[in-house]
View 1 (cartoon, rainbow, N blue to C red):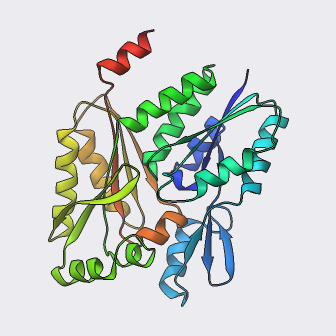
View 2 (spheres, one colour; view 1 turned 120 degrees about the horizontal axis):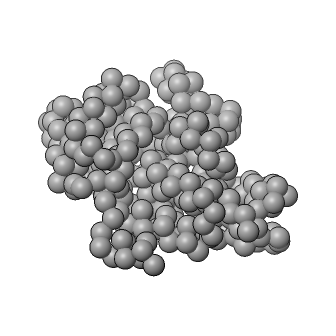
View 3 (tube, rainbow, N blue to C red; view 1 turned 30 degrees about the vertical axis):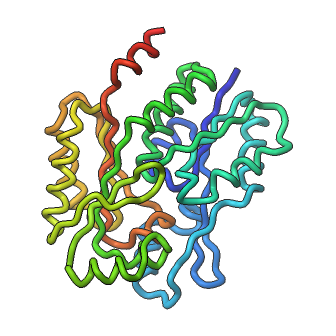
Length: 289
């Protein structure tokens, strides 16, 4: 049997990793007025943030049409796939998971399963990457699904934003919350819990937000994998990477940049960390079987 991994463009994995592991990425869309652009296909991150500064239209996002998933699944089957694991951002944040379900209807020739990561960005991407490695190593769908689900269970996300405005415009927070945050000049620290974006801290300066995130990361040791994601602040991402490297010498680190569709909701100045904690005793016992 041949297992292939499908995900969506919110995974924020580096292009090299996607190509090297044979991951299929179905893009979400960004809409500037009536113009629809496929995330990472018709528009790249650098182009997006330049346009965001000057375009009079506030961009919105749209989930992939089921037909896009159907075409992706059929192509993989035509290439010889007999099993497909389709892993996506939290169902509570997007209708992408449902589009994947609809896209699989009527497709024959392979067993197709879906997995809700309960996360987004590299919180999704790291699990996808590890699933693709396991699939390449010859593991089957059930085993890879269990492996990815366990990684998502051990994944923690912390993010700080330059402004709350884009979250408010995207419907992720109320005008009152955004106004209060601006008035107090606070920098939020956000996390993803039960598939939803939630505030976990508020500090007065950007540097304190970074230190707050690093402190939370340190409390989660031992760590299996660390990831850093940003929108427009490469130097801060590199600083975060270097600080995180000192937390656990055995942890691998991935640095990525958010794609346009994630940038619509975060805006410029997004800086975040994803942490996969080391396997617990339950996980080690399952792996040993």
